[in-house]
Length: 458
Image (cartoon, rainbow, N blue to C red; front, top):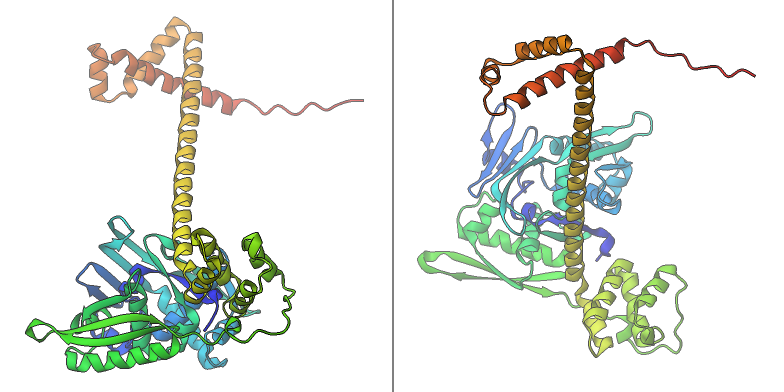
């Protein structure tokens, strides 16, 4: 299908709960109508608010493409590109109709708000979180360049707050069917670290959501959607059904891997082997153990998968093999390349890097807070010394006047404590006198004329 340049990092929380609707009319009919827009709620604590039209399949294709561009630019919050590029790479006709639909889509995402009420799982706990998708978007009047600014909370969540999964954008946009597209999301999430998955037909219809309410109507549509997914995806899903107590229909999914096309290293040997002169291939070969870098039976599959899947795909599977292959390096590498064993390792490494980055950010915030507090204490101490020096410079009469002014500025409760010479009364009086002293010093400094700079004479 496509290489890893088309893999979009996606929050598992938003694969589990719908953040677009496979049937726009269904979205309108299953949500609560309000003057401002519409609301869709899940019993688990998920609330989806639309202030405009509900996003549908076309809208999520646009959104994932924009996320892919953000991802390629180190998850930038701001994305700038042409409308032509978006329409073309989303597989749509480049005409005024789709340009208008793109702008309408951005308006839809701009008006979406999502809230997890104790339903957002971050890997340890269920949290409450509320965020939007797009903060703003605009089109340059002259160049027609499109600028989209994502919500920072949305980018951080898709980056890996909690669990994430990679979605193949090339497969996603080819599915065509809205139901198959939504089912593809659910299966990507539900087959995280497993090969089989079961769910009741009615529960599946609620999760999608579907307008059908009975298994006899749900199951045929799910089977049709699975057939479409199997035609467009490298991963194949077998679907069987069984009946549970009280006539409940259970959908039983099993994941398999598509048979690979015949690769160069399965074909009869060529008489000669020529190494392609590409910098990316040189980098990949240097990732191999030194003893393997000249072996034709290693180099051929590495180059073949590079041509089919790209450098990132091959690199992560070489790293995976280097880490795990204790013996039989060649067959281990071939299996890793065919089944993309390195993806899970890469996801774990990225998750670990994210944790390290977050901890470093927290440490930096703590250090900054401590520095600010230290500076505040230093300034406070310097002000105290200045105030005390000022008070010491006063005559006895002026000190008495200052003390009387300080008493007059106190609240009745504090004044009563000072007059009765209660606990801390001396400290309270001194603080009040120092505060007035600092005000006087500030007034004195403000009233001083600015001294002109001395001119140098020859």
